[in-house]
Length: 115
Length: 113
Image (cartoon, rainbow over all chains, first blue to last red; front, side, top):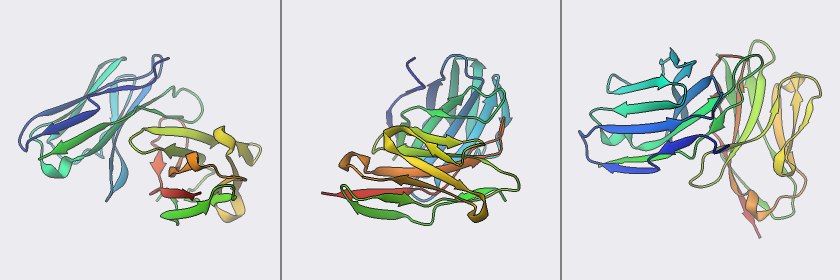
């Protein structure tokens, strides 16, 4: 199992540009989560999906952020337009869900720098 | 509100010394609790988890944690720290299926040789 795969690992872009982060969850996992990590705010849950359906997007900062999960093996987090304050490490995680608690497996993260 | 709290931002220990990282939780019911470790530039790796039953749980890399209901705590311990344990450690909790995981603010561990 290759684990949760995120791309790109690093992205540097200029303010106003569109950014798309990608995630491939572990096969068979029902839940997918997007987190953002910054020094100031720590780890924040942005949105999570269950069986490709968004369940809770209350953590999405504003309308500039959107996330999709078109199928069980792929999700995107898009920022349009990007701003310097969006600079952070974005993590994708997946979990098997079903009965019992969620045990999340994290990807290596995508480090975004907006100039 | 449901939460986990890590009161120590930064801890320094000598290699070979014992380690205890603190975590307190605030949940209405008994939560599911986790400890994750994050090495620089890496994602988070699960060290151990507590769901129910035995209150002392063993994890990877020689770590253990003890669930204490009376103290609302889930402290992480290791009897002898190695230099490679230097990392950031996160306590986290949730209340079960389809609920979101809440993370503490993390404790950065520095190991001196």
